[in-house]
Image (cartoon, rainbow, N blue to C red; front, side, top):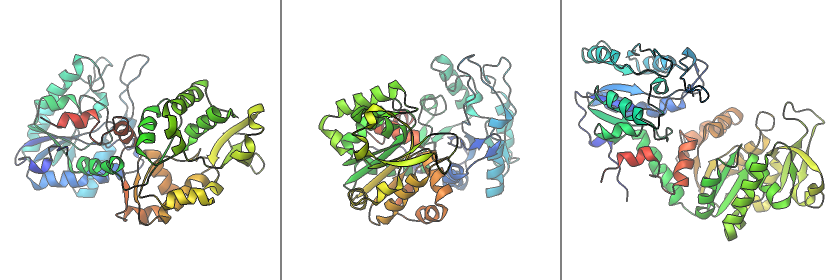
Amino acid sequence: MTMIPSMMAADLKGKIVLVRMDHNVVKKGKIKDPMRIEATIPTLLHIFKKGALPILMSHVGRPYDKTTGKINISELEAVDPIVEYLDQKLQLKGLVPTMSASDGYGISNLSPLAEACQKLKQGEYDYIYLPNTRWFKGEEAKDASADDFAKALAEYAEIYINDAFGSWQAHASTFHITKYLPSYAGLLMQKELNSLSSVFEPRRPLVAVVAGSKFDTKIGPLSALIEIADHLVLGGVLYNAYLAAKYGFKISGLSEEDVSMAAKFIADSGENISKIVELPSIVQCNSIEQRGDDNWDIYSIENMKDWACQSDIGYVLDVAEESFRQPEIEQVFREAGTIFVNAVMGYTALFPEGTMAMYRLIDENHNAIKLFGGGDTIQDYKTYLPGLFASASNNPKYYFFTGGGAILDAIQNRSAYGMKPVQALIKE
């Protein structure tokens, strides 16, 4: 059994602790959903309880410009709303040190952190919150500047805690930093990893549901899941591409790359491809801009096989909710021992019905372990089925992960501990 160093075993008293959170919840200067902040509060409270002095940090948005190589520092991607939320929620006083980048390529001077740490030790503030980690030179780099940033951070702390399950990429603040400080997993990180283990050691049958807007970003996790799962359900572009590759359907909005990747996935899966649960009906719409009374229809996959290869179906924007009332589909979900969901079934801006029908069917299985991950997945659950989501959030049979990409990365690596930042915490 893999053992990961826990913050519960660390001597924190009186020490400055550098804590990486995943508080990437700010959109255009405002908090969209505080779920990820709320999930890390037990870790923060434990740090205070043990008498430690925390320096918190998180990334927000994507300020790196791939075209110019510069980092765009904007108040719209600042951590200030996060600090305001924590201060109000926990009656604390946080400090965001003022730092600037002189050349447009990120913050490289961390010296203001020395004065901030002094104020922290003197009790003027309860915690420090670094500016957006992606504003710093080296955070996302693949050269020596990543280690330079990590070393500079380590000068101001004595212990590092990673509680950012959703931040699965090997960046300076999640990966390189572990070389320079004693490193531990936070409470949320441990909780997420334990729950993710249920995908790899599931109560069977395991039903996995995955969707996405591009096939190439999901083919790695899908290739792993079709081996692990007993049934695999696809949605979104993934299902469209699968249908196009298998039956020759011509669906608008699909790229040739998506279809060719789906064809490769089918070929490489061999006999396992029989695990795909083909949802029998789809929603065709003539527009992705608006939903009118007369611009959409429901098509049967079985009926389409005879004629769809000869003509363009148009846009397929959802799995029809009727699919989840078919006895063979109901049976798959009702007999499941574990259900893993990283998906909304269609383009929910126009057609949320398929997703809602699936979530209701999943909820009818009172015995299965139900694991949900992915920002869109959870956000749509909250938006379209708020009462059911509130009930599920208090149900021990449900678990809602704080990161979708992290889960898929772990699945692709075929281990709950496969993510590089997690591996960096595990010392031989």
